[in-house]
Image 1: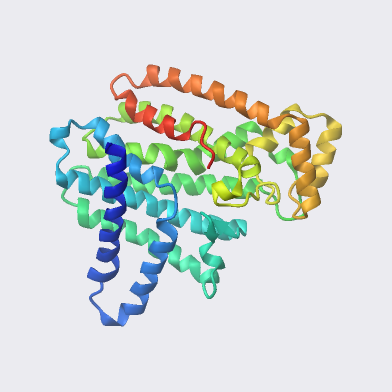
Image 2 (image 1 turned 180 degrees about the horizontal axis):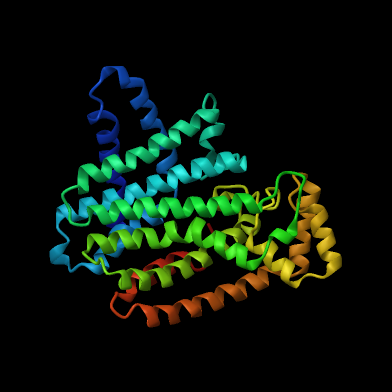
Length: 347
């Protein structure tokens, strides 16, 4: 029941924050058009996803605090912090789509692809990022965890951008396909920094700070479990990029065309013959449909779906062990709630 009502509370909170950021903050009539633009950016780029990250703040806080301490004020702040994390996700994805030349995101045209937007989207990304810190300052400035939250938002943004840098450097320039750049070690580093920190550790760490848990040891314990979960999540994402149904996922996968260091290609390189590697080198990172189809055919010959499902099962077993080992002082439900959402998902 709590989850359903949290979802409802979370959606309602967005409307409230939207009014606050784009109407109540508008004190200079000269800025009417700029605030109208900010409203469009927020509505288009922040609201469309599954909202797992944002909802995980309030979900985790419910597990970490006794009900008597979860006051209405605390609840409202947790919802706001959740939306700040969704806004970080929003500006990451806006930039990601430009860099990847993507066409659709969450079942609609990418923001920069919309008529009249183009590279003006770069300033829209800056606006969205700056809005995060305005909200945090207004709602959390008097709280004992305020500086912890600011440092967390800064650090996670920085680590994710380092991960994106690694990712971009591994995808060689067009026409220069070099599969020797791909290795499982490189892949895991990209995933850890680009995805796992902000998708998994970020919302739980925010909830821990809000619950008064500042101990570095406890944060490190949570990190061990959540980064491992984040690695699985990205591998699952890579699998769905190739094998997912675009009607369900809301996006058309382009990892093969984009020469991405994806789990599928890295795993395939580990198990394929030299002849197959030569075939892969001739087709990977090419935009034409025949090349993409050839790569997918190779994946099927190598039984990538079977290898993936085996990995998924092993990953789940490993996660149970990590929770038993590292979550001695933290409620196991914080981590198990996450696990339930991601294992066996199809989008």
